[in-house]
Amino acid sequence: MKNLPFIKDLVIYALGGILIVSGVYTFYSTTSILFDWFGGRAKAGNYVRLALIASFICCFFYLVCGVLFFLKNKLATPLLFIATIIMFIGYIAMLFHIKNGNAIELHTIAEMLIRTTGTMLYAGASWYIFTRTRIVYPPGHNAKTFRKLMKEYSKKELRQRSGTSA
Image (cartoon, rainbow, N blue to C red; front, top):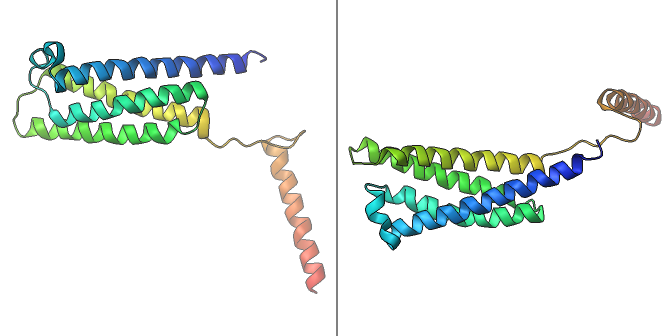
């Protein structure tokens, strides 16, 4: 039990490191296609511009949130939820692109699905680690005994109010 804070820190730092690596990779892959660096546009083939722009915007969210994970800052949670919304918009744009009969590379569908799902999972992990509500009970109480204590307190409070108002 004494090693749990160490393990939690290790998980936080690992998730932050993965976010930073994902951000750098996403930045490299999207900028090489958007700005045609290193022949990226020719290698990408048929791509969805809005989905690519959504990934490009999210790469900055990934980098910032990776650093925020290292700092153990709660701001990572809303930023990752915003990134999830942006990725959903990009994914929906890709689906409209496909529905309109435009050409698309098959790996783009899997890549967008992985990025959108990954962003959503990271947002959930960030919420779980940093911002979820934790109930801290008084010393010597657990959930069951604390409920009983609160019921007794409520009854005592009602008796006092009825006694003073009569």
